[in-house]
Image (cartoon, rainbow, N blue to C red):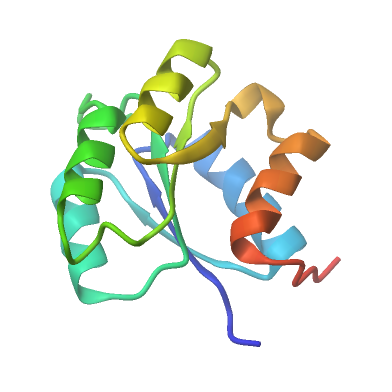
Length: 129
């Protein structure tokens, strides 16, 4: 099985490190980090990704993650790529799902089984542990 690729958008250094560690350890995923919606769109249009994780508010630019989700899902070249919002706020998760994202998770729930199960549905049970 080929290595799964995840695009991680807008996370701070600490959260990116935690998310990347989980994705590498549990799924053997390669994690590509970008900081802006423009970078994310360019990478999505030029490279293959199995999942996009979008922060609710981008750490460096202050951009809204929901805007990127809407744009990604409205673009014929990127609409099929699974997207999840990273947010602890249920109302933001509901908005993301309404915009076409899969149910995501909050940073506070990163170590929970439910988060790993959601990720496994997209990334498969590759497991490297």
